[in-house]
Structure formats: C-alpha cells, structure tokens
Image (cartoon, rainbow, N blue to C red; front, side):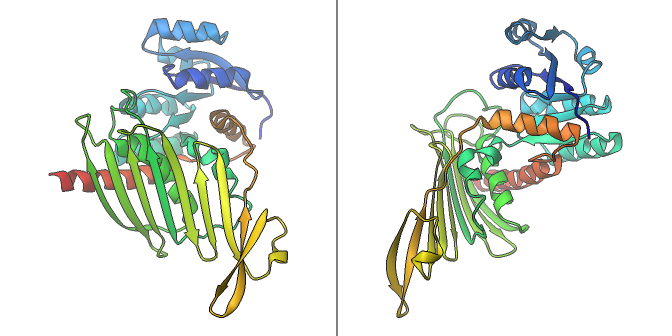
Length: 329
C-alpha cells in the first residue's frame, strides 16, 4: 500500500476526456502530469486550462506517468491500452473496454503478464440513486431497465448496445449473482447504419429475468431501473436521482425506518406495505470513479469495475448485438 500521489495522464481529451483531466487536477492522491491527444491544439488548450503539460507523443507521456485514463473512441482502445500496459502502466479505460472479446482478452492477458491493473469506466455503478439501494437486501427475480436518449453524433461509432445498453448490462450483472443462461433480442436501425434501438430479455441461471431497452432516438432522456423480488419492489430514477422502496412486512413496527405503511390483506392475514425513500447522497460519479482508480493503484481500494467485469459486460453486449444482426438479416 502506498500513500504518495500517483503520477497520472489522460489520453484523449475530447468531450469526456476533458472532465477526466479536470478531476485528476484536483484529486488529492493524483498528480496530473500531462495529457495527450492526436489533436495537438485540443491537447494544448485542455492542458492550459488545467495547468498541466500537453504531450505530442504518447511514448513521451508514458515515460513520466504510472497510470493513465484512456478516453479515446472505442476502436482505438485496444492499441492504446496495449501500448500503455506494455510500458507497465495501470489503465482506466472508458466503456466499453474494447470492440471485441478477442481484444479484451488480449488486454487482460497482457495486464496479467505485466502486473498492471485495468479498470473500466462503467460510471452508472456509482450513480447515487443506485448506491441508495445498498442498505437493502437485493435478490431480484425480475428487473426492468429503460434508457432513452435524444440523438447526437457522439457515440455513433458503435451500435446503441455498446454505447448505451452496456451501462445497464453492467448494472444488471452487478445486481444478479448468477451466470447468464439465455438471451433474446431485437433491434432496429433508424437514423444511422448501425442499431439505434435495442431490446433484450435475459434469463439467468438462478431464474432471474431481465428486460432492458435502449434507444438513442427519443425526445427526452430516460434512465430508469425497476427491481422486483419477493416482498420488495424498488424503482430507481438514475436521471433524477430518486430511489423508492416498497417492502412487505408483517408488522408496521418491525420497520422503523419506513416513512409510511399501508395495510393490505392476503390469504386471510393482514400485512403491510412499508414505503422507503432512502437518502440519495449527491456526488460526482466520475470523480468518485477516478478517485477509486487512483486509490486502487495505491493499493488502498479495489477497482469498482475490473477489467474482468468490463469484459463480462462486453460479452453479453456482443451476444445481444449478434442476435439483433442475425434477426435483421
């Protein structure tokens, strides 16, 4: 375990990379050494805003850092990450980890050989509304997730399954402790040559069923998760930061934390529905994610989403995409 600051750099300082740079510049345990981007003018501008150094060569940045954030378009992840890992650097890779499972396996094997760490940026794991579930025992039997977004050109280099749905696949895999059994999926291309709307129904080995729907052709943003299990129903609005829990209890006095209870009768006995609205502690999820990365490099924490977990989410996403393409054709 180390206590000294970690020398870190950012590779790719576009829309999201600029925020990585900003956070590293102010994290207590990080020392932002510099940034690299193929757009030199952009690198100079972002470096100037954050009082750090722009690098014109990736190799020069790698000579002076211990860890990097890779915030490039997905198709460049494997080559950039491989160069960083080969140089012995710990890497934070924005989701999805790579474009193919073969690429992900290559990086995981290389990281194991070099003794470096891979963390993947599935930021919704740190959404405050999702974190509010932690005090409750969650053993889902059915999960419904919906993620809609208006069309933008950013992210259209990959299908909606890898752009948006993969967030919810990762959430799903974190909530259900069981392997995926079967997947059914369908999708459509609406505005691009890629899949813009996708729906998948996933059944896990323990019997849990999930329905997830993603679209980048919508008027308004929607990011909602609904969890159903025996004697509990939870609804989580990831966009508004609102979490509501409805629990069935035998006696209203046994749930002292409930905001209110309502009686109902089932099978000749009276039971109660206890309503909870757990506090959603606001915080910048990206900053929390990057702080976890730095502390994981120090040995103080473990990655919230490891390279292995990122690969597992990609595997499900790729299978959904394969089924959709097969269905379309």
